[in-house]
View 1 (cartoon, rainbow, N blue to C red):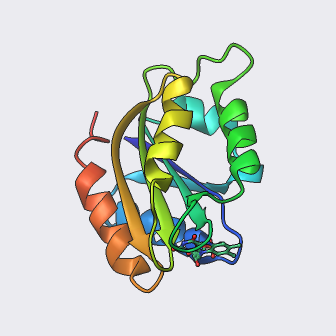
View 2: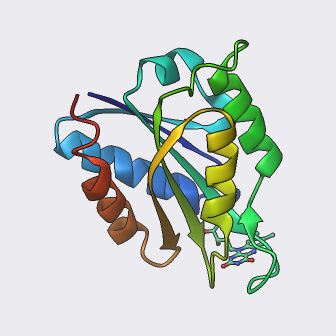
Length: 149
Ligand SMILES: Cc1cc2nc3c(=O)[nH]c(=O)nc-3n(C[C@H](O)[C@H](O)[C@H](O)COP(=O)(O)O)c2cc1C
């Protein structure tokens, strides 16, 4: 059982969610490593049974929402997918985003990015920035069984 959480965070909220997920997995006895998108370790991704990718919601608050730092995210996904573009092939991936008011279609936009690289999206959650702890616990509870290999 091995989980990697990769997050893109501008002001720390999405990072906080990632670290809370790390705590939740630790409490379950599941190995979990956490990386900012710019520091992701492809070897750790290669070893993981489950990858969780988190981003913040960028937009005009009620319209035009998308994953924030999309270029960072794409770069990280490129690193994760490796030179052959195969590392995410067949990998289980769960997604989350953190938002203030409304996430819009951010999760489905992230899902499209992951699907292009062959990852299998097994779950996703939009977490309001005032309920990071609850959201992190809910996402981990939903995917924890999946990570039991
Ligand atoms: C430039 C910018 C645009 C944002 N646009 C939206 C938005 O369209 N909808 C929304 O619900 N929250 C929006 N937010 C709020 C963030 O998505 C939210 O605070 C998030 O938790 C920040 O995560 P971070 O601290 O990891 O960067 C925006 C924040 C910023 C800085």
